[in-house]
Length: 215
Ligand SMILES: [Zn+2]
Image 1: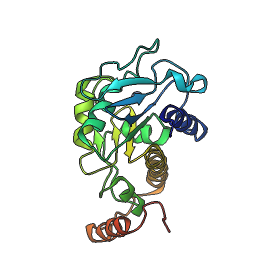
Image 2: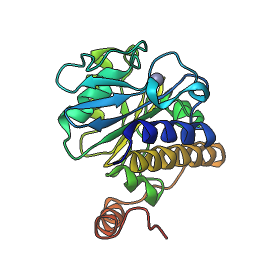
Image 3: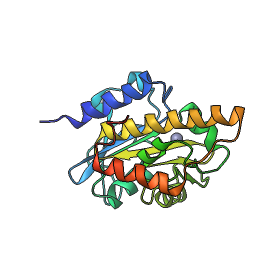
């Protein structure tokens, strides 16, 4: 049987190793039957263990079992995403450097590179700013991820999701990479954008092939 707590721990470690998170920032969750598991708040990622993961009810975010650890302060948007999208089983949130850099501009990332389609559309939207841990932020994120698997959070970071933790990690890593490319391109000129026809071709291709078997 798959140990979801161990999976969650291993993705947290992978985010740390990939430089996508640091210290106690960022958080991850995955669906666990009628609830979900989420990383605890205030624990340095390098000190996390599988038993610290907090199990919550999907319907209202109440705790499903006693724990001396409190859930991530961002549990509201994790719960909202997992409740709204039954095909999504994992959510990853990071404060990675380049996505966070772009997020402070408060603008969507346009179709400047074909891999923008990994997030499911012709842009990666930037959710308007709201205080961390609030329902307002959760509501802003739900709007920004409509027909997408990732978005930026204004003045904050990024959120990515997937059918499993690996897919959510891969999308978060790709969004960070795209953010870096966009920042670098902006240093030397104005990026040329792909047309909607060109993007549609890529999206169709992604739908007919595994999205990670990229050329
Ligand atoms: Zn955050």
